[in-house]
Length: 436
Ligand SMILES: C=C(O[C@H]1C=CC=C(C(=O)O)[C@@H]1O)C(=O)O
Image (tube, rainbow, N blue to C red):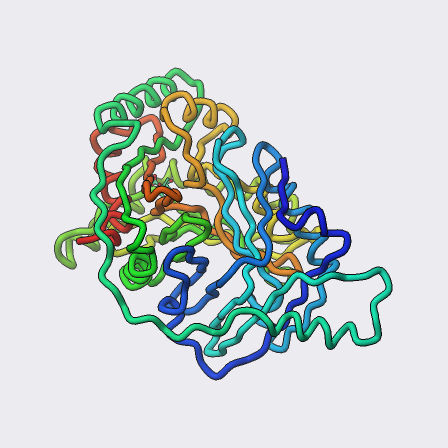
């Protein structure tokens, strides 16, 4: 099902997009909308969206394909004047897709009215408006389009920083004991030969008081986890270290993560833990399956695809991960959304074989993942974009209910208590961003 707010007028309307350089916009986060933040950032750079020109909502098995089709049509019709020409300039939509085909959650692409961006030391503003486009374009069409685009919101001044709203979390549908039992059952099924790996998640639930907004929480995430993708799209906020897929002028890249250990207390023990992770047969097996699934799905779309020869250790403030970077060139003109569709869900969040893992996790987890572990990111008018896997994240509903999620890859030698402890580490970014 696809529902575009602009659908009734789409044949008569087009997007008018104007990007121009500005002196400086840092810091970006204090300019975000506190109630409905739209944001994609890493290391202080990225894009912030304000207002909403258009929203594309999809559900079901074709949620990515349907959104991609509408996006291709809108982009082809758009009148774009981009005077900066960097990733994230020109026409962009922020997006978040549900993890599962059967999810009750909608998937969205949101085109803001105003985009504020910073990249490679340059700053820009993009104004996006939807204007009537009669069949025969009048002679003053350009002037009218420029006028429409310039009517959008003002660039907001950075707001003073407020305290982080406190949210107290409690286990959601799956209490810790039931999670451990689910892990034990998954190991039994793996040992029985049903599948090789399944990722099982659990949920924490809390209450956010509406007047608090989310900007301070996002600020905290960005400060504490600067090397991750910090995102906010339609109430989904988080700090993900995992790049699902990035497309930029014919190049493709991804960062696959799977295999985790805690940080050590001192420098020596921290190093030892990282080394032990690279030598752990359990983590290497779990990691190899995630890499294989991403490579298998990306390869048909690439002329060339290289993987880092050995997994490396990625250090985050809360844990170590095993990581593999993939880099390649597109072979078939796919857009970022085409590749999102091809590669989601990888074995970093589902398992192997994919279909069996999806049915086992649906049976054992006991809740709808919503947009957790789904693709989150942005796409531009040329189809380029950056997409992460929505991890270390929470969905904040309109009534203030906060659902946070964390999961672990289960393989044959997984130990239920260890996996439960790993979810606690993975919850840390979100739990601490809501008050420490
Ligand atoms: C499923 C999650 O993490 C995935 C990504 C990195 C490492 C993982 C692991 O070691 O289990 C998971 O596959 C999560 O954070 O909820």
